[in-house]
Amino acid sequence: VLGIMAGIMSGLFGIGGGIIMVPTLVALFGLDLLDANATSLAAMLLPVGIFGVINYYKAGYINLKDSLWISLGLLCGSFFGAELAVSVNVSLLSKLYAGILLYVAVGYFDIPALLKRKKAGSIVEPGTEAIVSHKFWQFALLGLCAGIFAGLFGKGGGLVIVPALVRIFHYDARA
Image (cartoon, rainbow, N blue to C red):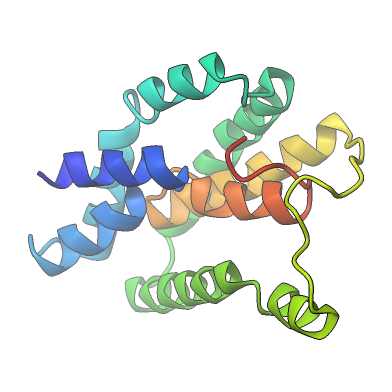
């Protein structure tokens, strides 16, 4: 049941199942944070998003080149994040985890954009912004940061990648 819930969240929001799995493994199954992180990463290792990727690819939303550069960064970053996680005090890791989740949650409200819309009195249509070209290393760096996050906190990296792709790279949220 936990895997199904995590999979649904991954398909709907692209944030991966770790945001559901880790807190649930800690709160309901009694695992400590490092065990929950490791279990989450192991569970998501192979199946994470494969059917979602297929559906998004068929709909034309996947930029394969950018995705591969992000993947390369994720590969390297997750190694360093996991190395760091097993050497950091678990209490500190828990506090960092809670702080980052709070930061991301508040970030999804996009308060500056809400204030702009309220002042302007109009709503900006998604996708009307100018398209900016980005370098491959920017995507690899995003992947590296997301990989470190994944290794530290047992997340697939989507919690970092999706907001960055939307806000910094100006991707459509479905892409």
